[in-house]
Image (tube, rainbow, N blue to C red; front, side, top):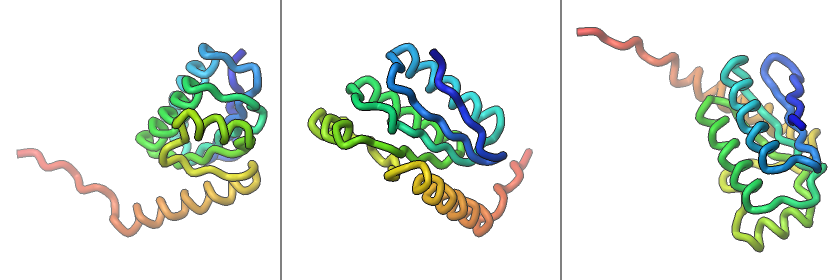
Length: 136
């Protein structure tokens, strides 16, 4: 079963992971979301894990890797809805989500994501567009 990719607007994608996602499904999720972000030039992604009661080390690694991939593609990422049992398991396994912003719920994730996107836009404006390459 594929993970749905929900377009909130032209800039934001919401990805709810469902409880029955397996190892193949989480790889499909990674492939689908990275391709969609690249294709549609999405600026922000919320990964909602509130339906997950259990996250194993493999899924934690894939989530972390996916967030890093999305940042390399230029998108801001927030993970929301981490259940207490999932947080405990991740900490006990030493597989916390490294450098991945989190939020309590979808509403707070969207606020945080919009703030991150505004900061990224401001930084881009302050730096200006990249210089054109020179050809000798």
